[in-house]
Length: 141
Image (cartoon, rainbow, N blue to C red; front, side, top):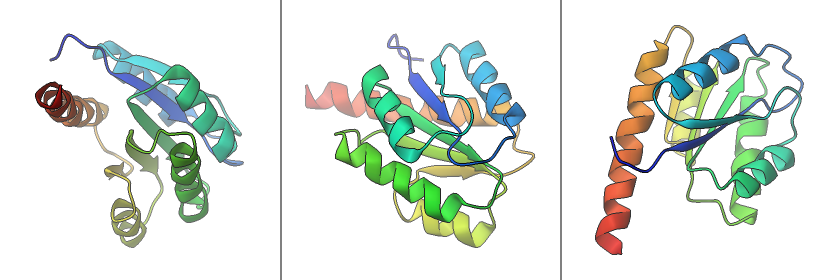
């Protein structure tokens, strides 16, 4: 793994009040050496994007179980872009039908994780993706 620590924000947009999965993922990411900011429940897309900009994160992970992912996830992406953070690695998880996953992945989300995904798989995937990005940044410098 790179010497630079990966900075991740975990956000819970909308009215979804279930955060056990998000907290579990946040804990596993910390255990894998990442710096993690958890925004808490009931965040607006603008609040998540503002926190991501203020914390200068590399990754934004969204968790949603309420079914509003097709409305809220793109709004978070748009808010990030408006704040100059359109280049962050966007990931998400929750109860998301496969067709919606395909649509969101085609619309700026790098990866969506469904129920039952081993948390270590999420951490490993993020580490590998960020390694690729850090290497590209090093080549461009």
